[in-house]
Image (cartoon, rainbow, N blue to C red):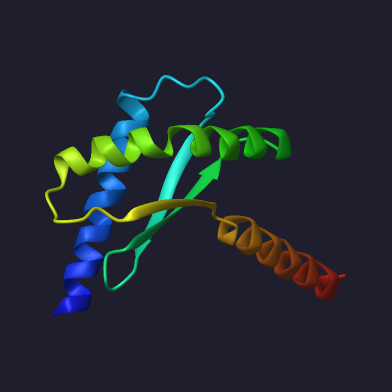
Length: 117
């Protein structure tokens, strides 16, 4: 039951963070960001926000620095919408799974094409 509540709250936080980033944040260095997942600890003390960025390494670094600057604002805006006793600390981390899956798929396609030759 508790895990279900944690997952539900994590999804709600993800939805609200996405809304805040799309409508209220006016940071031009942020880039084209997609929030992919929010992992919430069982005691609600921390929420890891995983995101992806369209672009190269330069855009990733600019987005990382932008998240450091706007973390407090995003937390306060989301906390206004979600009423819990103590809102978790937000930790923004780049989501590497999409890149890892892409590399894995490329290697599978390469191995299949080598076998056909």
